[in-house]
Image (tube, rainbow, N blue to C red; front, side, top):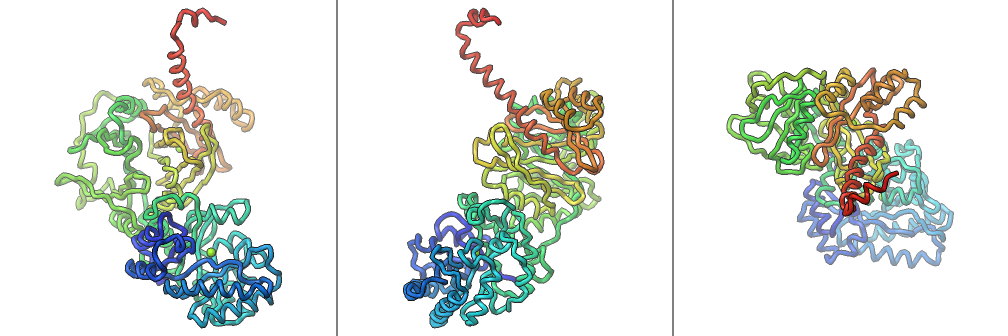
Length: 626
Ligand code: MG
Ligand code: MG
């Protein structure tokens, strides 16, 4: 089994906080980052003892900079510098020290000189029982590619000198990975893993601010990792991630996120290299979505549900939770939920709910202990990073298991509700707290076995919003996660959540809703004029969309028609969607229109408010005319 490691630079807090968080998340070892050590009140040997008590090995001390390819009169001073660090490495019990390729403008472009000086360093290291892992930084002055660093290590040919392969430095440069197979296993001293989104920017800034844990960016870490393992690398797979958001997040949470990324990465490698994870069970849609509704907005939420064609079908036997249903589409309205209003829980139909829960636990998801009365169904539930509960259930259970529906007492139908043709919950959009986005995407994806889809930046009226969709291979469960690119007030539209419901005839739903007194969110005429200008749509279709405030998107294989409801409470609305053909997206192109439309009433409200304040002399105002 491959050992796991994490660099202390990945986590926030003091060195003690970082070590405790790494141990708690189950890492085997750590890389001690020099600034963390220098800032610690603990001596290196005390750090060694603390790590040992926590069950962590110290696998690497890093970084040692700007050593090689210097004028020869500087060599002795650099070796003295190195000797002092060997003392630290020895006291830490670390064995290996990382040396990055020189980034100084004074470095000399001479591989022979680099080899000669690294040989001298390796000699000194060997005397101390220390190994040197030489790493090509992507922005190294003369050595910036791993295969170049490897040629120098080969030329040195010293048992105390090997190579460190860092996935970021290699994949960010697009260097061919073929040469990894040529490196003998005993020269692969260390491997660092980091993912990153594809960005076009200075590679140093890219590395220092945007690295992420494997599976959170755009690099093929599975291929990279498989290659180093195939080459015989036997050391730890160690995460080295510099990230602005992670640096300010709770280190315990981040360490768990980091471990989850490694477990998921290992799962994607060949069998035998990973800890056993129960495979994801196949999902068959949403069993229900539970909405936490503050008492003041219960009425408007009920009116909206009714307008959409839902009826209150049952009441929970022991909780203030009502089941609203339209055929097989089920929503729970919880008027007594302790948390913030919004989407409190999502429940997915799992072919094997127990295995889904086991997988969640193996991926370090906190299992929720639930208040449950005798005889009530024992639903497996876990807590997502954003606080949403995730249930695994089977609504159509055999006689051996109690289904969750049996916890509800059916209500006698009140009046008749004509069907609006809602079919299923299409997707759930969860706004994430600012520093939870990458973590949440990996969480839902790995636990539920979802695949990453659209990842976009959208221009909302109050700022940029990042959006990422994840969905089951069969499209039965879709989630859209959003987060403001810059942290700001969560009450802005970026913080809104929605549940999208699929229907067979979008215009019928819009019509029925109007008849029941709740029309869709109004969309400006300009939108429809623009649609007519850029797409060759039937004018009649555009007119009926304009009338019902239906938005439109299409791909070569399909179309997407959708509208939004007004917001109920502070942060919740619904979307009704009609998918035609093989359209697989979410109408993201229309999201900025929606966010602006949602902003408009808020601004009108504020303006009305301001005007009321200014109406000290109403008669004069009326006389303004014009
Ligand atoms: Mg590195
Ligand atoms: Mg949506």
